[in-house]
Length: 128
Image 1 (spheres, rainbow, N blue to C red):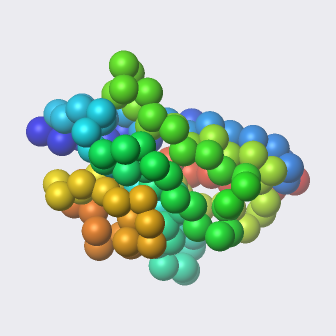
Image 2 (image 1 turned 180 degrees about the vertical axis):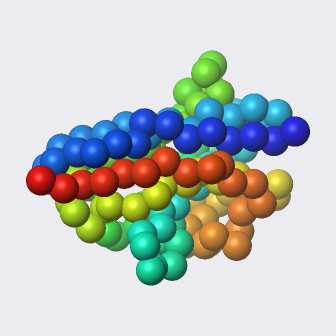
């Protein structure tokens, strides 16, 4: 049974950092890609970043490029999202997801309907 569990969210001041984790079970990450998404109240779910199933290549939304970094630890079967220089507009529930057909690092990898399995989400609040 595929399961994804996010953790690491919390309250942080503008300019601060957080590292989100996405722990996978029921499948191995070394041949599976992961996407990170976020959804703020009243807004649509937005693709933030993804890491490819096959070659580990990564892709980022313009809104987070240069501030967020996605990485994968195959030994721990976990994907991370390191978030630096956080802004109030980064406030949202963050979700990780994976796809049965794999993830390609590109614009398609930031589309929510490219994914089949989702975690429950973790809240990130950026506020002074």
